[in-house]
Amino acid sequence: MWSTWETRTPAYDRLLESGLPVFRSSRGCFQALHGLFERRRRAAVIADRPLPSILSDARPPGAATRMLASSEAAALLERFGIPLVEERLVESAAAAGAAARALGFPVVLKAPAPGVAHKSEAGLVRVGLGSESAVARAYADLAARAAAVVVQRQVEGVELILGVTTDAALGPAVLVGLGGVFAEILDDVSVRPVPLTAADAAEMIRDLRGYPLLTGARGRPPADVAAVESMILALARLAEEAPGVRSIDLNPVMAGERGAVAVDWLVELDAG
Image: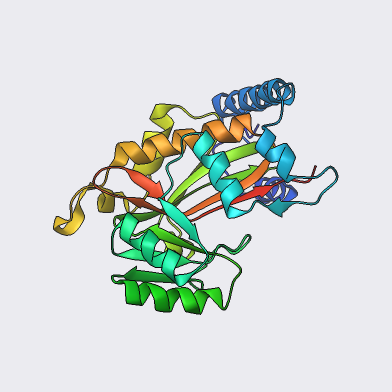
């Protein structure tokens, strides 16, 4: 506990550099202690729960940290009510055209690649495909690069990034940010440890500098903020109830006028 408001001293700097937690109020100190004990209590409760079968099946005993395959990750996310864009796995140009007709043009073609966070930068995504001929050309290009190709319905909206990260000492936390593929450049994110309340989710979104983009800035229609809040809470529940998950990256999440969906996803399992 630092008992004076004066912080521009060598002693204060040394404490910070040492990595020790420094509190400037008893309230903050006791809140941190409460959070630490609550985290340990919840960890003990979670440890007694059976690991979801999708995780135990995907991670052999003693395996190193690894990324779930896209289909495995999708099954886990949907189990917790996280909406994902509709997609079809295809094995031929004809099947890709049929999937595009069923989903409705325009569509997106991409090659699932576990561990690749930015598929567009890796040349594994084709967007705005408005005809069967365009779909056939895109399929031929991607099929030459990857073992699998999926067709997705193209979704418009404000691009967000949502995810889960795990700290060895503090446990899992949920993050939300603006920017989608430009998230790292914009660096506009809000992070909070689980568990989360509905109020927490609402505050996280409103903490973003770019929040006005979600409310209809520059004459654009407002995004469905409530749907984003629901997705944040679903991620928090997943982080609590699936302790085998190290990290989750939903990027981008498209927040439209009605609803929000993830159009790309990565789920990493911890060592086990």
